[in-house]
Image (cartoon, rainbow, N blue to C red):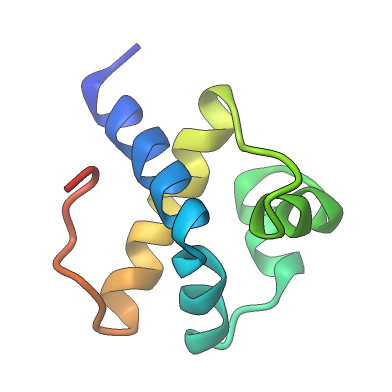
Length: 84
């Protein structure tokens, strides 16, 4: 597993645990379906992640973290750094 993928997985979980993932998505004007399509999961899955019902795992978590990092830069959030 590449270090970058691990950093994005950690980022995804951190942003989900604080509610920041949903806030970023909404602030960027992105709907669940767009995130789901880009990550390769269903809308329901993304909603479950954002609601704290489930956590992304494996390579999907890395892809989700990458998307969240892009959204963070897009909305002018915290500096883009995968895990910190």
